[in-house]
Length: 213
Image 1: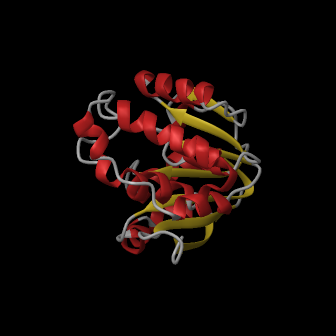
Image 2: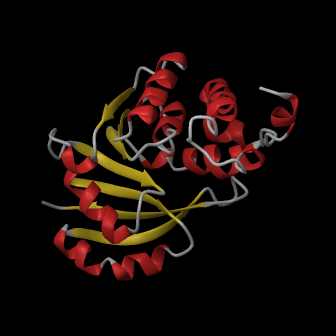
Image 3: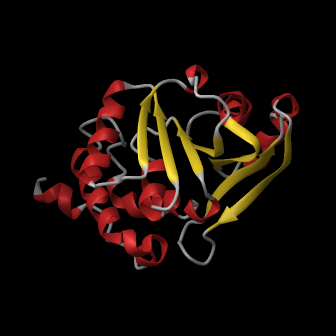
């Protein structure tokens, strides 16, 4: 990495130690790898280095405490949030579902380099998943509008499981626009939650919903 790129990387916030705990060294290694190769491999945009920790790593990892059991990350891309959450929660089994080959290559490389034994990488579209409704939870970040995302994620969740979908400031409006899809998927207790308030500088919004068969 050249000096100009290295100096543009956001310094590690003090909250990283709180969010990642024992996984901090792995998080640091992933941050270095993403900073070095993310733009070149089309994983992050050219303006993301100055907010790499705040906007991407911590924004994703702060939702890790919401999960248990077996979790899928749909459209995992660079590994956000799934790979980052897997670093923070080694006790949870993560499946990263990503259709693009170059991204699954990246994810597989990172899983091996970071020695993450709790992660599987699957190259597939979520609608082509043939493993059944086996996950305790499914998450996604920056994939699509909620009304499009629900049919792609809810079928993967077991009865009694939940969706935990990362969203922006328009999350409540997205819920309203997705009323038809929410009914069709038989989702319950659909709500917006703020995660990480008081821990990280930019708290994360998630749409959470129970799944019933």
